[in-house]
Image (cartoon, rainbow, N blue to C red; front, side, top):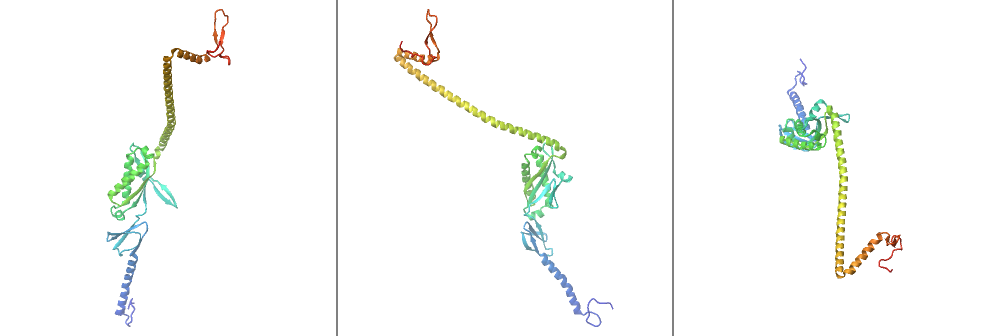
Length: 339
């Protein structure tokens, strides 16, 4: 007789009914205990500080849990998807950052170059590398409104950047309008993603590097040097203008002030002369002879000191007779003095 897997307490070697039921109970209890243990273990989950948990029951979203320790119904009734809503995420265009041994390296392949090569409004080709930094504002929308939200962000970011660069001059994007391009791209990308309702907030768009393609870099460098030289000459001209114009304005004000002073002097002198003439006229009308003699003496007093030696020539005299040696100090005679 073959050996039975059930131990037998009877002499014929067959197990009793009680033994069979006992063994069956033990076989049933083992999976039940395992199921209870698995259910208890899978009923609890932890959400990290930078995350939120989207809880779904039979595929329908019922709640969004904040960071912490939470409970859910096990056995596939409740499912949890964790979304990093407080973390700043980024997407790179034109290059990739690779962390090798604690050091970050920037890798640029032909595929990456296809993302960054763009045509500007003046039909120039430039290489634009940029980074989009964003956060997930609504975890449920991020998971369910788009089949691939990250790819949606990348496609729309590239479309917006190509449109803005295509409407700008290449020299502007390469030099002074980089910040304006990045700001406008952020605004337009946010509006576009809002229309898709995928629950994403764009924080910043940064232009990492904007350069001409490798084949035209030497020519571009020459143009850039020429533009820098032009800017230098313009700055020097502005500096010279700022020096010359204020100086000329100061000299003009000085000349005007001198002219005003000369005009005031001439007017005052003329008024004084006119007043003096009026006074003399009044005196002359009262005493003509005396006034005429006084005027004659005053004029002689003003003229003779500058006249030099005065001589009298008489008939029959061989040499002139000096009348007044006014050029020699102490020899002048008073006008109207004694004989």
